[in-house]
Length: 476
Ligand code: PLP
Image (cartoon, rainbow, N blue to C red):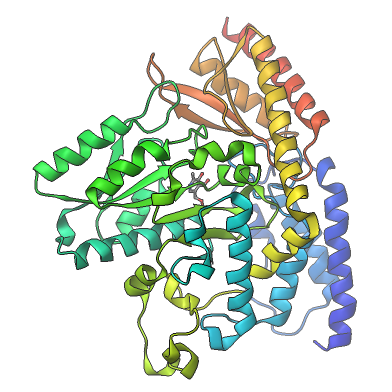
């Protein structure tokens, strides 16, 4: 493809994306494609000869778009958002256009140094302690592909720290609350410790936050049995209900036991842009690592997961292997960061560009306003739920996630979710939460789509009310 051809086709693709942004609200949020429809619509073999771009782009409309869930739709309230934005998409495009591979500082100094600088900005923007900034020359930030990868590299560094201190690998034990994300168990599996090496610490039934006394008891029991506690994850914003673990109460246990304290703020970390939410990070000074996903709620399209470590040498000592073919004078000098030593893969994309573009386009003020507006919409929805006696809140709200259910019980709540999703105007997901009466089925409404506004949340609420009426009359 010549530059001129690229210019012409690129214009068409950008136009397609701009049209998509305009249309997305009018599309059904979820596809009705049965399994196999997209697969069967595609030829069984690759084309032997070049095809026309008219045909390629027509297939986007004909085959791909009908097989999509529209994550950027203002009707998408499922899971957590994966919010994209114009500046982020342009950063992604530029990254692909440059095609650099930033595994080593020397393979593109700007790729590494922009990332280091923007991660310093971001640490400051969230109010994180100075120890996580590169300017300390000990701590620093790195962009990972996902919170799961961040948890994995933190756990690998923690394992290395414990083993170097004389612990036996077989006896290492990690801790996270029973509400923590499954990526913590997965990290232990990948690290070769096995999922049984992660203790699910009990939670307070009202807040669903980790019970620090239960953590203390679990740690003592493991010590008594001759095992070595080495890692604890505090979650700021659990996946099911965005419960906030109290770092200030967990940190002393971690410090006393010499455990690596990792903080997983994958979704709710974006709230730290607003100083009024920084109570969540009280005690964070003693964390060894902190992670949140700009790709969830900060308008940076997937993937962009921000990880900071207090001591970069611990990551490198767990992950660095240097074959001859990667050696170069800059790395040998020790004066540069080689991000390949801070992650599982060797190669890495120029992800800092999209983060940089987003921050420069919106400014910190614009990003704060974005988060505050979604929190306002969530508070509004919470008020509506409370005002209807058929509904109840199923968890204390701490973010833009609203957990609700029908008082009539699990079966009615399940049917409500099924009916609302069947409209295909909205998409919500479910979870199960512990309560004093046992586990309960819950509908999650995660507000975070970039295009969502008050009228969408009100329309969702009208639909919830209407469908609740149908569910309750049919289950009566
Ligand atoms: N941690 C928490 C609290 C999450 O909610 C999620 C995903 O929703 C993750 C980790 C995993 O995120 P990722 O997809 O970036 O691995």
